Amino acid sequence: MVAKISQLFLRVSPYVALGLFPVTLWCVFFWVPSDAFLGLSQRIFYYHVPGAITCFVGFTAGGVASGLFLKTGNIDWDHAAHASVGVGLLFGTILLVTGSIWARTAWGTWWTWDARLTTFLVLWLIFASYLLLRTMADDNEMMPRWAAVLAIVGCVNIPVVQFATRLWRTIHPQVIRNPDGGINDPAMQATLGLCLIAYLVMFTWLWALRVRLLRMHDRVDYLLDEAYREGSTQ
Amino acid sequence: MFAIIWKDITLEARSRETIASLLVFGLIVLVVFNFALDVTPANVIDLAPGLLWVAIVLSAVTGLGRTFLIERENGCMNALLLAPIERSSIYLAKLIVNITLLVVFEAGLIPFFILIYSVPIGGNLMALCIVVLLGTLGLAAAGTLFATVAAGTRARELMLPLIVLPLQIPLLISAVQATSMVLAGHTVADLGDWGMILVAFDVLFITMGWLAFELISVD
Amino acid sequence: MTPIQYVGLAYAMVFLLFFGYALRLTRNSKELEKKLDQLERETRGN
Image (cartoon, rainbow over all chains, first blue to last red):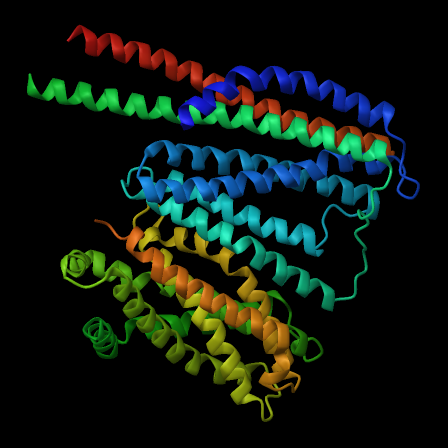
């Protein structure tokens, strides 16, 4: 099933993404009106928020795929999980980078320990350690299962981290307020929605590419094993 | 299960090397941070909870891998896995051993901590111990689960902190906040949300560890 | 830097990250494909 889905994405997503992104750029830079309070810098928002949503989709999908892998033992699900977390982490990086740039324009500092950024940084670290585990243990046959457990533990932790950091931040005086509530203008909503779709399509494309790469790696390993076996029996 | 606990504890009681290393490491961390953060009588009240927990967390994460490494080296792990006991029992046994180790370690560390930072502990010692215990449960639960994993990677000692520290951050936040409240004189009942997170984290991780340990051990 | 330059920077970073990653994946794929072809030829030859 994973193979079919990824092939579908590979064929469709690149074109959809390449078609959508110029439209989003036009919307963001020419069509949508400026925010009354924040001015021009608020436009970063349109490429920032969809990043968050896509990233969470990636991590959660990774957790689900990990669970399916543990249940069925089918290596396809492991590839799906690996790719999902990997691409999710990329979107997470986009979130951190755009968030940092936005912080710079809005508050004059590249980083702030407010609840949202902090929560996100912690989650990013958890899933970065997932990728590190996969690299550091790739010679161990238990690795896919370990990685799957880590992915699930990571996903379960998402609400915990959210709660804890938000609580942590509310007891300290909020020097900096995070003003992204209340998007009322329909043009803004439309732009945001469009960017979200573009991001999700991009996610599927990158995910499919990654899955294909993982399957090829597996095939290479298999063929190498075969060749070795043939060589040693001759 | 009790056999495992008894074995590990008697092993440790006889050699005492893990406890000793943990203690010394904890003390070193406390001392180093004194210089790193330039702790003065003015800022010690603010920094103290954090200092204590940094020392505990770093020592725990370094020390927890030990029980597993020793077993791997002696081939004892295979014997354990072949034995007709549930894997989750192995987890619980390891967990209890690790908690015991950490508690003994903290029993040595806390007095030293109070002394060198002149922490005005007053009547709050009991409350502090409860908070520390709650935090330790969570640390041990996560660490015990992933210690097997880390021992199987190429990055050995570095891998466990890499995996486990990010996961433990909510616990750390709550523990530090709860500690600072306790040091300021609140009772355990006043801890409210922080206490809730600590307990929730403990329950969550012990449950996950208990469920997942089976998946993690080598067949 | 003016706000619009920051916005530009943010968007540039996003596209860099996206297409850099996609490029890396496609390049690795092509390399692996070549290696796969070579290996398949070898095993078939045996």
